[in-house]
Length: 471
Image (cartoon, rainbow, N blue to C red; front, top):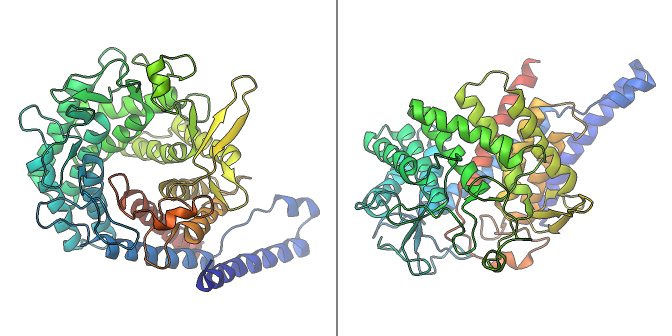
């Protein structure tokens, strides 16, 4: 840990300590012993300001590092492969998910930076690559993977498409339309939605099939050992349709968004407190334990608990419910809280203060065990955001969500931020020290989770700071 980090942490902890001292002095002078036990810590404005200041600096560095470096001015879209020193290295194949995430991140940040025209221009650059190269002009839908020049690449010998990838394309396009007013981008997002409806949507059991052929034929059974439906495509379709519905209040879209919210909340999570990761087509859970040899050999950890996806889903469900305008949505609020609580109860690293990547449940005694102590960069970012939402909703909860959100920020600052070259390591250095030399950018890693979490937290902390001033 660098000296500057140590000083910053000391100052903030000293502010918290003094706030607690004065709080308990007041209680001891004017309250009873019982009242002492019931006192809950409320952060001071100084704490809010320290957190906001730290996060703003990291966010500014985030966009300074990614753009214009990642913008491919020769062939369009965004470079994928960036090494740990922020040098362009690698094949630079372009994945629909990461390309779309760049479009979304730049568009979303344009509002935070007060309509920064350069960010909207960057988002447009990405949109044009999706429109001209990644959209299949013959069969519709977005290709999953293309080379740097935009030629589709086969995976396992065939061209494929995925609901997950198409969802992110819609997500990015909707955000770009919101930032720019470009009607052609909205039209392409709508075409993507209708393509999913025609080919991926399951009219019998609901939900969407994840893997499809180029022509749009869904794989309704296992695809190379991968079950036909999964929580990851479900939650990001939920996220995508939430974004699209804000700019296109279509009735069919509203119906599908509502169905996805219920499906994620009541089926993927249900009464367990965590997400089931994979499903058969009828939404019975898909387990590796008693499944086919092909599925077992696939290496999928479908019986695993992903604490990062759990806390992210809590946020995405609340966002969808809000956009749908559901009043007093106690069911969604309850399940969102259960997801965060489960992650804190069973996935929390007490030593370094962050949720771990994965766990499993022993079917014989239902005991939860942490099986992956690592922390990929996106998971603490999502947790910080999700816990801060809970802190505002449940300020007196014994789990002390504000403390946990702040602890996630401490973890990010101490173990995930590269204080030499800038940016985020792929994994926290406490459990994955070699991440120091891992690429800063690749087809699965860009600035989507991180910039969203930082902007959301900065805005929420600013609101809490302003509210405390009024109180």
